[in-house]
Length: 350
Image (cartoon, rainbow, N blue to C red; front, top):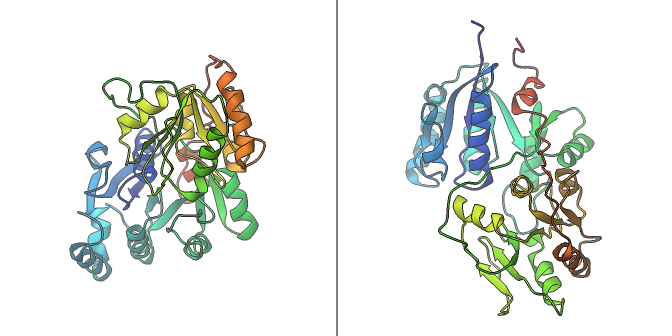
């Protein structure tokens, strides 16, 4: 029997896309004939803890920024063998990082100092307006000190190569999170257009609101669902669901929407677009390279001419009136995480 390439996965954020991506990467690598997932290191308060594979799941910290966590970090720094043992790693082995997190970066430094190959997935080349982490200088530093990186889009890959030509990269197309779970009945009873996701400046929600309110005979509701700081004037045609959404709520809102809108003014990709496409929904995007790349070939796609509210209003009216095409569509996930890792040159292909 051939020896499998040992690898562990480490994600020390609490929730969101990084947590979902960790689960998907774990499943893919556990199904691989070339890799053996030794451990998946998480915080116990990670929202994916209960869904993570129990045969490989290990607790690195019980929570986030507490004295207990600080003391554990200090302990790992002075006795790194304890960390390597917990992650079931040895010098020369590899650890895959699905998403940068503040706690994760500290632990990754300890791993690197002890000759563990740290392989990171880079989601964005620069910080989005309204986001706080990671700052641009930190992203550049992480990229500069890496030998090999995996990106989630060609758009980010190109930017890295333009700035850091010597760093080897591989592109892993953003996977479908495949949100599941059931909510009792429809969350929204009427027909609606949907914006879903964290409410951040770069996602263009204010432009979307301006666009919909400018259409005099606009009939569906506009549902804005996600957690964030957004204050709008009361409008009977706009429904706000301002909270952190569960997997079941995301699934319910997407499956019952007439059109899903991604009015971003800046984007590398969206973690929700693959799920919306696999659900066969009508999708509106703005003409940003990362979004155009993600949705290439999708039959129920509508693209705004520009990023402004006027362009959004025009494409909203078009999408509402256009019948949905009932055509089977497969996501462009032709490149597996297994193939991306092999391109690093540190693993055996046999």
